[in-house]
Image 1 (cartoon, helix red, strand yellow):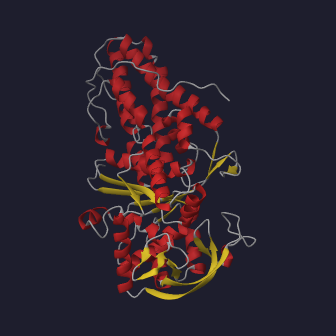
Image 2: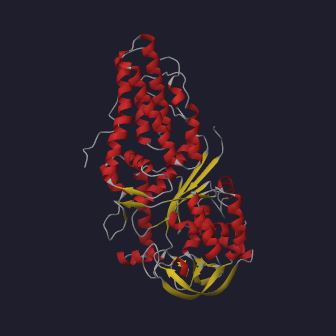
Image 3: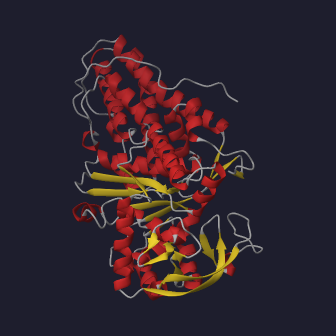
Length: 492
C-alpha cells in the first residue's frame, strides 16, 4: 500500500475582504485530512493554501476600513494564516498573490502564452458581476441577475487583452472524455461540459479600469484580470518560474479542492490556460457543495455566518472536524447546526470512541496481566477499503469505515464480557483491544489529530507510527488511563 511518491493538494486562494467562515474552513479541512493521510503513507506531501489579494473586493473593503490597500491586505492575510494555524491546519506553504514570487510566475506563464500566439488585444462588451469578479453570459443570468449574488451585473465595455481559449475547446472536451475522473463528483462534470459546449469562448484577461493588481506585461495601462492571476497560484506556490526543481517534483497537482461555484474556472478556463502554456493538467478537480445554516445560505445580512474560530472556543476542535466530515457526503450540500454537532459529539465521540478508550484502559489498569494473544479483531479492520476511499477523496466514507472498527471493538468488549475473563482469555482480549486502540490512533490522526495524539500518549507510545504499522503485532507499551476524551454537553 505504501508508495513513496509525492502528493500535491491545494485549496482555492481566498479573498481577504473578510475573515474566514465555516465554508472556507471546510475546504481547507478536507485538504488537511488528505495531506495528513498521505504523510502517513510515507509520501512527500505539499499542501498549498493562501490568499487572493488582487481583487477589487479587497480594494472596496480597504476603502470601507479607511486603510491603504497594501496595509489592508497585509493585515487580512495575516489573520487568515493565523486562523489556519489556530485551527490546526498543516499547510506546507501559504501563497499570497501580492508576493514577488507570484508575479514572477504570472509573467513566465503569460510569456509562454504570448509566444504561443494565444494573447491578442480586443474590445470587451459584456455582463460583469462585481461580487463574482467574473464575466457572465445572458444564459448565466436568472431574472437578469447573477444566480449566486442575486444582483444585476454591470455592462462593461473596454479594450482588453484576450486569451484565445476557444482554440482549446475541442482538446478540452477530448481530455475530459479520456480522463473520466478528472472532474469530481460526476454531477459537476455535466455542468462543465455544458459550459464548454455552450458558453466557452475567448476570455478577457486584463482590466483597463482598475489600478490594483499585477501590471500586464508591456502594457502598464492594464492589470492582469484577478481570476487569471489567481489560478496561477497553484504553480507559483511550488516554484514555477523561479525554482524549477521543486516545480517539476510536485506538478501536476493531485487534486484541486474547490467549491461548486468556481468549477468553470478550474475545470475549463484553467485547463485551457495550462494547454496554452504547454503544462500538464492537474490530475483531479473535486468540487464540494455549500454549507447552509438551518436550511439558509450563510450571509452577513441574515447574521448566520459561522466563524470557525469562535466555534472552536465553544466546542473541541476535533468534534467540529468530525461533524463536518460525518454530516454530509463529500461533494453534496450540508446543513450546519450546533444541535446536530452536539448530538454527534455526545452519541458518537463520547459514547462510542471516548467510552471505548476509557473502558479498555480501565480494564488494562485493573488487570495487571501479560498483554499477548492472537489477532481476533484484525478481521474487522478494513484498511484497504479505507485507503480506497481516501484515494477517491471520499473522506466521509473513510471515516465511516474507521468508525465501523470503533463499533466492532465495543461489540467485542460486550460480547466477550472482558471484565469477567481470567488468565489467557483475559490476556488475549486485552491484547486485541490495546492493539486496536493503537491502530485507531494512527487511522484517526488525519481526522481527529488532537484526539489521536491523546490516545497514543495514554497507550504509552512515544515513537511516531505510519500506515505501515496498522497491523496487529506485539503490544510492548505500558498504557495508563488519562483524561476523558470527550465530555458530554447538555443537549440544546
